[in-house]
Image (tube, rainbow, N blue to C red; front, top):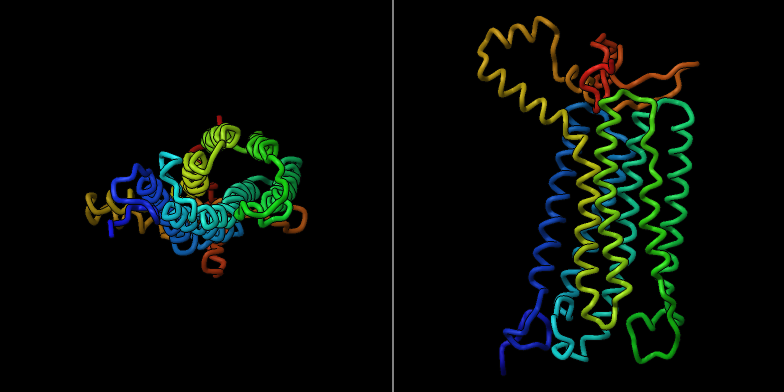
Length: 335
């Protein structure tokens, strides 16, 4: 009995990108998990200001992990094989079933990081037209992805036809839905009433968002060219990169307090006791540092709005006065 290759039913030495796809899935999913853990450390322990966007991104990672797991298992059933002649016919059923199972995880994950980013905008946008515009985009984004999920899991009639080719029926093409989903990402509103530096950072985030959109467009072209089971390998590989990259892009700006804390600790260690006592003399504390970087959590207070960390130490609830806080993206006042 000959040894079996990476894919079930194939001999050793069969040309296969399965190991590469597996490595990419593990690497990007692990990296996004590390970034999320750092984000939750910053929000939960450094500045004590967790919000809906933080919990949304955690649940989003579950979708990323689910999609990665399904993708890795799918490589064992033929995903990544380079030649159609090497694809075992007995693997078609499991291959198609796993493809069907992976779609909800993927759609959930790409929806999640967009939703988290939009909720992050709500932290820094005061009351006004842009805040209401963000709510509208959240509603449209939610409705679209729900519709996309419903269509995706019902592409064929009967549904079983998506993984069981022995069943008679018909399937619809979903290319137009992919195009709509890619276009949705450009609807995020970047013109917000904030300082110039913050605006530049948001533009940077949107530029990275455009990169994920480019990946989606590449995926769409791959979908159009699908001719057999093997053509889906690049599509799924790029999908694994896309959803994890979206999570990472969403989390990176929240790590600024960690970078500052590390820099201050390094400076304090090299500066000696004088710097330490000087910092104590000015009332510097971890709470104040947290206030400096907490993204604003706007909430009504009479006729005004109260940003997190401005005037009152909300981290410990003791009502101690702290320096006026700047939001996460603020490093200097706009001229």
